[in-house]
Amino acid sequence: MTPSVSPCPRTPSSSMMEIAQKRDPRRFSFTYTLSVWGAYITSVQGLEAHPKDSTYWQLLSNGIPLTLGAGCYAVSHGERLEVRFSKYKL
Image 1 (cartoon, rainbow, N blue to C red):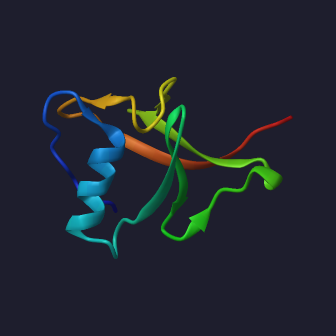
Image 2: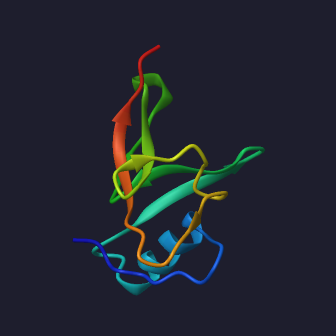
């Protein structure tokens, strides 16, 4: 179970994840890097995504994959944000 965080209007999902991590890093922790496309999640709970393994962290809202990244997608009140370890096909 991950911490519940209530967003302010137009709060980026990466900011919400930082708040959850600060509240209880034993229950939720993550790392990210910044690129020209914004924040890219590199690990969650110590599990790292690796391009050589075709793995990444996928963001979902209420079970639906997002088309925007962690630094661009604004979370709404009552929304359930999920970070799922995924593998893409080349």
